[in-house]
Length: 258
Figure 1: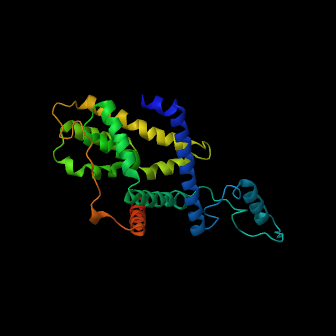
Figure 2: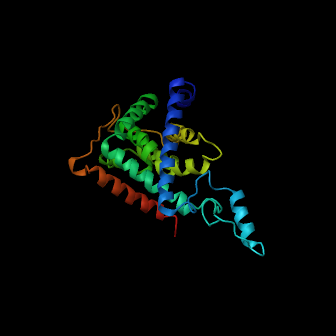
Figure 3: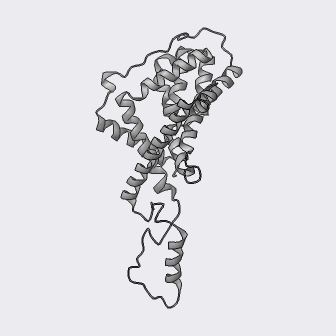
């Protein structure tokens, strides 16, 4: 049913296309920042990089004798080092982590999460806490456990299984951005499809979890979606949220390097 709502209704299809364009714009902005930081050789633009320019420079460099042409120089226009993971993908992790930390601090993500949580609770008969955790997983990945931290201690075994299944079955926004960067060259609208897949993953994970561990108790948040507000002492300035989000992104980006 969720798939039908996403792909068959014109308004939902338009929303997926709009979100795909938004995410592609963020990816372009991140690429521009990486290019400013590392230079056009390590982060080339699509218009400058290519085998023709690289082949021309290599042929002239290896031919004996070498006759330089006025204006020839080593740069992004005649050398393509390919897709270097450390300079193209890892900055995306830092960028998306900072953006989502800022949006969370501004309170822009929480209303969307509550809408999805109410839909999941109504459509699947879930408790409010597991619906809230599943909805948060669409946007922030495994960090969504923070949203239901006050209820974790009193959750039933089935609720815990459902939450773990939704966490392991979904991807964080930073990883989604990485996949979009990798695949955008061959599949321009991949960002929208990945976001739609993130929404579809949560109900599928809940179905599998309830088959594995059926609910035999009465959850504390049954019939309602808990409202978890950010405490005043947890709120940060816009610049602090960007900096702390970027630092979290650096930690995530440097994990695959050792």
